Image 1 (tube, rainbow, N blue to C red):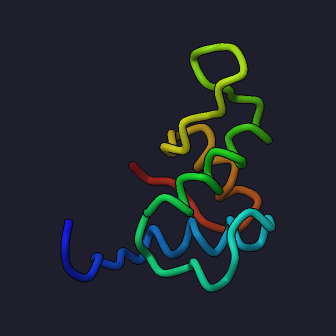
Image 2 (image 1 turned 90 degrees about the horizontal axis):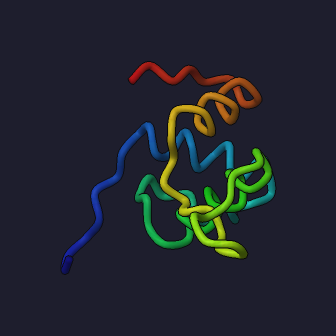
Image 3 (image 1 turned 120 degrees about the vertical axis):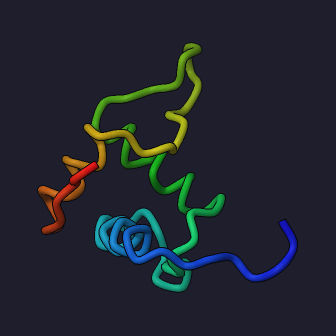
Length: 81
């Protein structure tokens, strides 16, 4: 969509953890869950053992409860929803 993306505090928290994991650069920590964050989350999901639906397909990069909870446990945040 055109315009400035909305920044969300929870997204910035997840992005900070992805930065700490070396999966996202600090400059991409903007609170906007864009394509770079999706790619970083996909890499985190794969570290957690998840893969795409088809053989050889990467994880989708859409955070679920399991991958967020694991990231939070490692980086000091709690998943509540």
